[in-house]
Length: 94
Ligand SMILES: [Zn+2]
Ligand SMILES: [Zn+2]
Image (cartoon, rainbow, N blue to C red; front, side, top):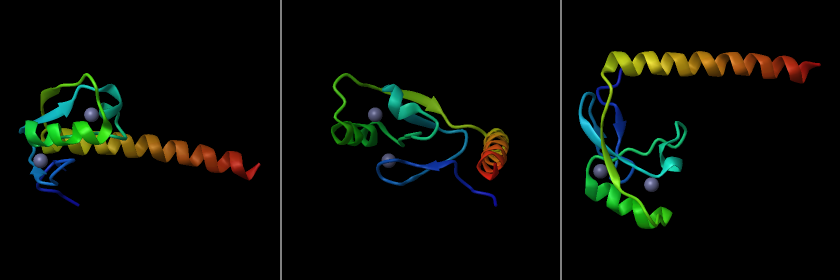
Protein backbone atom coordinates (compact mmCIF):
# COMPACT_ATOMS: atom_id res chain seq x y z
CA UNK A 1 0.00 0.00 0.00
CA UNK A 2 1.83 3.05 -1.17
CA UNK A 3 0.36 6.50 -1.02
CA UNK A 4 1.59 9.26 -3.26
CA UNK A 5 0.84 11.92 -0.72
CA UNK A 6 1.32 12.25 3.00
CA UNK A 7 -2.06 13.32 4.39
CA UNK A 8 -5.10 15.26 3.45
CA UNK A 9 -5.66 18.77 4.67
CA UNK A 10 -7.98 18.66 7.68
CA UNK A 11 -10.14 21.43 6.23
CA UNK A 12 -10.29 21.21 2.44
CA UNK A 13 -9.08 17.58 2.06
CA UNK A 14 -6.52 18.59 -0.48
CA UNK A 15 -3.52 16.30 -0.61
CA UNK A 16 -0.43 17.39 1.29
CA UNK A 17 2.57 15.84 -0.43
CA UNK A 18 5.66 14.39 1.20
CA UNK A 19 8.54 16.76 1.87
CA UNK A 20 6.30 19.78 1.63
CA UNK A 21 5.51 22.55 4.03
CA UNK A 22 2.18 22.50 5.73
CA UNK A 23 0.62 24.21 8.72
CA UNK A 24 -0.23 22.96 12.15
CA UNK A 25 -2.28 24.50 14.92
CA UNK A 26 -0.29 25.61 17.95
CA UNK A 27 -2.98 24.31 20.33
CA UNK A 28 -1.60 21.18 21.97
CA UNK A 29 -4.82 19.13 21.70
CA UNK A 30 -4.77 19.68 17.93
CA UNK A 31 -1.26 18.25 17.76
CA UNK A 32 -1.73 14.91 19.46
CA UNK A 33 -0.85 11.88 17.41
CA UNK A 34 -4.45 10.72 17.28
CA UNK A 35 -5.79 14.16 16.32
CA UNK A 36 -3.02 15.17 13.97
CA UNK A 37 -4.57 18.18 12.30
CA UNK A 38 -2.59 19.33 9.29
CA UNK A 39 -3.44 22.16 6.95
CA UNK A 40 -2.34 22.94 3.42
CA UNK A 41 -2.50 26.67 3.97
CA UNK A 42 -3.01 29.30 6.64
CA UNK A 43 -6.50 29.87 5.24
CA UNK A 44 -7.44 26.28 5.99
CA UNK A 45 -6.07 26.59 9.49
CA UNK A 46 -8.05 29.81 9.85
CA UNK A 47 -11.24 27.96 8.95
CA UNK A 48 -10.52 25.38 11.65
CA UNK A 49 -10.19 27.95 14.46
CA UNK A 50 -13.90 28.86 14.82
CA UNK A 51 -14.87 25.17 14.62
CA UNK A 52 -12.86 24.37 17.74
CA UNK A 53 -13.30 27.80 19.31
CA UNK A 54 -9.67 28.48 20.00
CA UNK A 55 -9.11 31.71 21.79
CA UNK A 56 -5.39 32.19 21.61
CA UNK A 57 -3.96 30.30 18.70
CA UNK A 58 -1.72 30.62 15.71
CA UNK A 59 -0.53 28.51 12.83
CA UNK A 60 2.95 27.07 12.77
CA UNK A 61 4.75 26.03 9.65
CA UNK A 62 5.97 22.45 9.57
CA UNK A 63 7.44 20.09 7.02
CA UNK A 64 5.89 16.78 6.07
CA UNK A 65 8.14 13.70 6.33
CA UNK A 66 9.73 11.83 3.47
CA UNK A 67 7.94 8.65 2.33
CA UNK A 68 10.65 6.55 4.03
CA UNK A 69 10.33 8.37 7.32
CA UNK A 70 6.57 8.11 7.23
CA UNK A 71 6.61 4.39 6.42
CA UNK A 72 8.95 3.81 9.37
CA UNK A 73 6.73 5.78 11.74
CA UNK A 74 3.66 3.86 10.57
CA UNK A 75 5.47 0.57 11.17
CA UNK A 76 6.50 1.65 14.65
CA UNK A 77 2.96 2.73 15.50
CA UNK A 78 1.55 -0.53 14.18
CA UNK A 79 4.09 -2.55 16.16
CA UNK A 80 3.18 -0.69 19.33
CA UNK A 81 -0.52 -1.26 18.78
CA UNK A 82 0.04 -4.89 17.97
CA UNK A 83 1.83 -5.51 21.24
CA UNK A 84 -0.83 -3.71 23.22
CA UNK A 85 -3.56 -5.68 21.45
CA UNK A 86 -1.96 -8.99 22.38
CA UNK A 87 -1.60 -8.01 26.02
CA UNK A 88 -5.20 -6.87 26.25
CA UNK A 89 -6.47 -10.05 24.70
CA UNK A 90 -4.46 -12.09 27.17
CA UNK A 91 -5.83 -10.17 30.11
CA UNK A 92 -9.39 -10.55 28.93
CA UNK A 93 -8.95 -14.32 28.68
CA UNK A 94 -8.17 -14.73 32.34
ZN1 LIG B 1 -6.55 22.93 2.82
ZN1 LIG C 1 -6.55 23.84 16.52
